[in-house]
Amino acid sequence: MPVEAYELVPPPAHAMIESLRGVGYSTEAAIADIVDNSIAARARNVRVQFHFAGPESWISVTDDGIGMSDADLRRAMTLGGTHPWTIRAEQDLGRFGLGLKTASFAQSRCLTVATKQAGQRFERRWDLDYIARPEINDWRLLPNGRPGTEKLFEALDGMTSGTIVLWQDLDRITAGMLANEPASEDAFLATAEKVGEHLGMVFHRFLNGPRPELQIWLNGQRVKPWDPFLENHPATEVTPVERVYSSHGVIELQGFVLPHKDRLTEQEASLAAGPEGWTAQQGFYVYRSRRMLVAGGWLGLGTPRVWTMEEPYKLARLSLEFPNSADKEWDIDVKKSIARPPRLLRRRLTDLADQVRSSAKQVFAHRGAYGRRAAVPDLQTAWIGRTTHGSTSYKINRDHPAVLRAVEESGGTAVEQLLRVVEETVPIQRIWLDTVENGEIQKEAFAEAATLEVADLARTTLWHLVTKVGLSRATALERLRRTEPFQNYPDLIDSIATEDKQ
Ligand SMILES: Nc1ncnc2c1ncn2[C@@H]1O[C@H](COP(=O)(O)OP(=O)(O)O)[C@@H](O)[C@H]1O
Ligand SMILES: [Mg+2]
Image 1 (cartoon, rainbow, N blue to C red):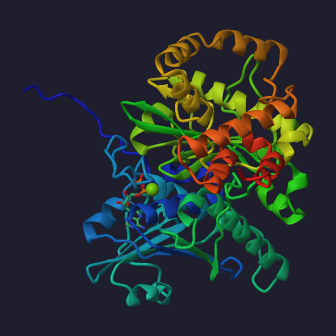
Image 2: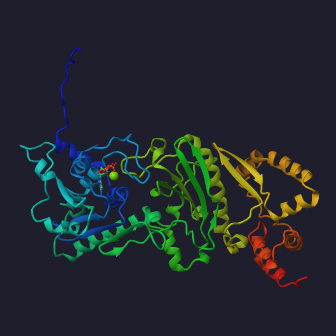
């Protein structure tokens, strides 16, 4: 084989690292990237420590994950040590093999990692002051932390496995700060607080529940999850989870209309608003393997014009979740702050968002029936929308009590045929156009009907459930409360419940 002529031109270490420092990581995004690695290492507890000492301040992240072997640690400290195309385990939140290094360099001039696996302990350090020396200026990874850091790694002694990431020389964070100056310490702790808020937001799906799979501690305090959807509030309206299947895995979509402020206490409202406030936190929340990447915004979608952040839509929030196997389609960036929906999905996202925005606008504008309506778990809807391979079809719910009754009383075939005709001819295009052009939102079910008509329908359905289906009266009433449109008429059902039981 002919030998080709070439020159080897490795980047000068010092200049390269200084440039990488400019990637523009905020402190909170940088720490979140370190925590990503802890989660990938299956940690149950992550302890973030912000220690103030003026220019000597340090930050550490300690996890009780699986730790690393000596070779693992060497690779972990290598820039691009893992190829971006490597297939990742499902819980792996990494991608480019850069996070640990770029996130750390952005905030600190000295990164030490100490790790323990199978009782063995290893350590490595990237020290920019050392690399910057003119006679060095090379990719020299040091074997130990700076002298005096030993006690900062003592936590590993009590663990069988785990990892500590230590940042020293926090030049960007502590610029102009003095030790023993209260104002400096306050500013440092304010940064810590912001980090806590951010972690509570991006990892909320891990921190949730009475027995969360992950706990994060910031200076000894538990980081509380921030749920953007007020999922457990009875007045939150929730659309069913929609799943879109692609060759890169399943995408899950769900819309939420948060409660009108009249239905929230002041404290609930200010908490639900989120770090950037109500208006800025509307729109899509994009999750990758349950880790939040994008916290609000409309992703450049919109019809007929691109949607912007506007007050009337501030109660609309949507959850969008994709697996790490779909990274390429979503264009994620090194800082994990950007994700763009694939073209094929945009139409579907626009449709659902449009629907959620309309409801959100109604709730925002007038309490009316919407304001009083509580979300009903397991609501038996009259229509069911199904999305497969990007196209949606709408079916009439055969389990709806009114449908069950009609099928039974007619002997079946005729009604089934009628339902098929209706399903196959839903004027979707027409409805869609009318909505876009007139901003017209379909009226609430039976909005113009006299309550008498609803009451009549409720009574007949109840009668059928009891005498034909064989439910107890109490169970049948419960079923009615969870059936469209009766969930909107709780008072009516209450009054029917007290009627003569014959
Ligand atoms: N806390 C940790 N525990 C165990 N392994 C870790 C930890 N942090 C980093 N690593 C290892 O270092 C590698 C490089 O991390 P990183 O630079 O963030 O890139 P990426 O997360 O994209 O792989 C990870 O893939 C993982 O193998
Ligand atoms: Mg990483």
